[in-house]
Picture 1 (tube, rainbow, N blue to C red):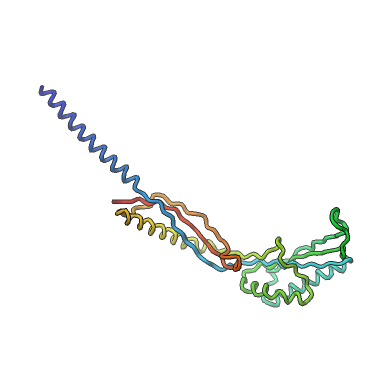
Picture 2 (spheres, rainbow, N blue to C red; picture 1 turned 135 degrees about the vertical axis):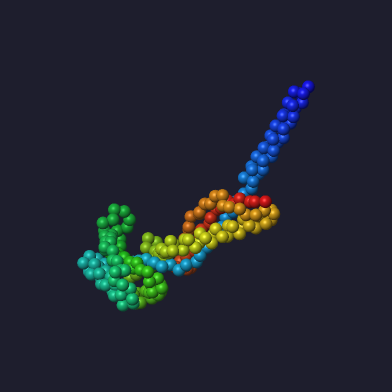
Length: 233
C-alpha cells in the first residue's frame, strides 16, 4: 500500500512537470509565431545626369560623290553648331555614312527620283543635360541652313539617363526600412503588442523610370523592402 502511494505521488509529480513543460513549449511556439510581414516604399524624383542625342541626317542624289560631299558638309555644320553652343568636341561622335543604292534593290519599285541616299548620325553623349535640351529645341536652326535632319527615327531616339544611383541607395533603403517599421508599429499598436527585432529582410530591386511621357529627363526611382518583425506581448 505504501509503495502504491509513493508511485502515485511520483506519477503525479511527473504529470505536473510534463504539463509545465507542455505549457512552456506552447508558450515558446506562440511567441515564435507572433510576427508581422510589412513592406516599406521609398521614391525619389531626380534629374537625368546624362543624355544621348542622335542627330540623323540624310542627303539624296544621282551622283554618289556629290551626295557624299553634301553629307560631309552637313556633318561639319552640325558639329560647328554644337561646339559653338558649348558642347565639347569629345562628346560628339559621327557615324560612318550609310549608303543606299535604290537601283541595287532586289525587291520593291525601281522608279525612284534619286538613285543614292546617304545617311549619317551625329551623336551627342554629354552630361550637360540642360544645354543639350536647349539645343534640341533649337535644331530648327539647322533646317534653315539646308540640313535635312530626320525627325522621329525610331532607331535613333534621344535617351536620358540617371547614372548616380549608388549615391542615393543607402538613404533610400533607410527610408524604406523606416516606413516598414512604422507600418509594423501601427499593426502592433492595433493588436496591443510591441514591435520586436527584424526576423528577416528582403531588399527589392531598384527601378528607374521616366516620371511621365512628357518629361523623360525627370526620372522616378523606386524601391520596396520586405521585412518580417517579431511581435512581443
